Length: 288
Image (cartoon, rainbow, N blue to C red):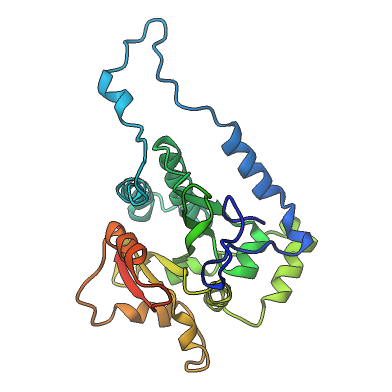
């Protein structure tokens, strides 16, 4: 599966994500997702019968990006929309105690809201998002991958693999696939990855690409703040391998202990796009 719109830029530290084995390349989930994006019509800004003409300022909103960092404010806007929508469900209390959104639902609400907004802002040629198949989610540990693209080649310059971590009372059903959904390729993926935690799989995945690939663990609520979205981003989690018993949610959440400063999503991207090559970096983020 191709994560970025083009192939490698030629260096080991910033190479694009390599195709997986054949059983997973032709996943129906990713194919249908890509098809839906390709078929999605652009917003109709023309006037229709009985509808008022759009304000002239509305036509100025779709940006024409010229600078490689122009996408950062647009990314921040997409994240704000996604966080706001997801938070409605994180904080919702059903009076009848019947509605309990699953981890998968919360992840999809965030992701689809982000994707919809990024398409409307015309930023995908500079900063794109690729969704993992169910098999790839298990094998690689990532739910999706963001990529900063070089111009004009559109090769990935920086990649951010994202894994959503839910509160412990939700996490147990995050990958509970029903029997009818357990395809042969899915069963193979589960067997192949059974000896590592999901966090360890994503750390290995990012380390195999290089220092220009970051692992971002996105917390849908923390133990002491269940309604907010936080993140820990690093290109240096691999340094913990062999020094701790395992890399899991508890270990990563401990990064917040004693922290005095949390980056914004804008600050996170500004930091990773301006740092020196091969430099290790770990950033704590508050997304909303």
